[in-house]
Image: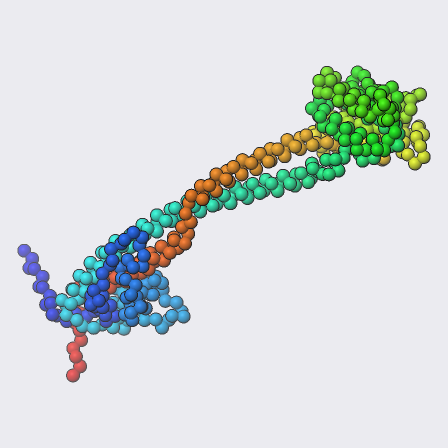
Amino acid sequence: MAPKPKKKDPNAPTLIPEDTYNRARKLIDLKVAMKPPKGELTPEEYCIPPPFHSMLEFKETIKFWQQCAVVQYSERDMKVPSRPQFVADHTKCPKTSRPAKEIKELFKFLKSLNKQATKRTGQYLKQLEKKEAKEFKRQNLLNQIASISEAMNEELRSSRKFVDRQELFSEKYMYGSKLGDKAPRKNALILIEQSDAQAAWVDETKDEIIKFINGVLEPECETFNLGLFSGSSVTTWCPQFQSKLDPKKGLADGLKWLNKQVSAKNCNSQPFPPDWQSALSKFTGEGQTMPWRIFICCSRSPDGVKQEIIDLVTNLRANSDSPAKGEPILPINIVAFDPNIVGDDREKDFFTQVAGSEGSFLIDTSAEDLVALDKMLKAVQVKKKQLDKLNKKLDKMEDLSEKVAEDRELLNMQIALNTMITNEMEICDWAMKNEEQPPEPEI
């Protein structure tokens, strides 16, 4: 059986770093004890209470550990505390000799305090983590709100740009007509395509014609006529150009005839394409009074006979006289309603040549534009509902950002104090196990 190790003399002189001894002794002498927590942890519950932090023995050491054992260049004269890795070096850790029993007392006290401090550090950490979790949820919610808000605003910006680009609510088209803002002095002819291709835009067609008649033709033109052209026939309101002031067959009767004849039902009964050549020939043939200007509402250009129509119109202009001094020969204002022809150069070329240099050509996509705009605004509405729901949720959540920042500071300080106590305890442990004897006094 191995012999028991010899017990160390309790009064044997033992080396310990002087600064460590002074701090540990101060803690014992001042009877430092932690306060039990009451609700929220505050600085008062630190393992070393705040009144001790400003004492000469602790001030610089606490700052050192607060800075994670880093000394800034501007603080290079700071006196750093003794640490276990340097404790054997007498140049870095000046030592003092104390009885072994006193070192043991220091170690016992520091061990108990360190155990309590470690538990208290966990309590500060738990307090912080609970608030951080709540604040993290709140920040996520704020990010969601910001993201949806930005997406909603982008949808609104896109909607505004779309409206501006398509001139959807432009004053000249809200109150004016795409058929033009000028009418000839007399003999204006309005032709409307009657086919299944035009059926989808019957309401838009009537709207443009009514705006044109009321806003432009009524104040400027003396006589006019209305006509429908399909693949099988050409139908007119009156046999000849009619005075707008006629008590029986005037403007009001023309509008009544338009509303009755131009319908989706009547259009669907006629196949596409309509006969453009018959329509133009009926009003420009021999013995007919040539219209001063023609206004046409159609879906798109007819298939297969584009060049024949262009040649017919070109020939009519070349072989006809001007209806009056200064008036162009057979100008045509055209509004097409099929949105599929947008960007089609062949369609544009056909209608531009038919319209002539004094005429005009526009594509009315307002029906499709309004559907597209409605989809955009519905997407905005959906995002607005999401936003309202998230904002209501946010109103119920407390802003803990400041409290989280405060708790982080509390935890950092507690960790620094806990580390300081652990450091002093480890040095005391080293001192108890160290066999090195203090030097003999000089004689």
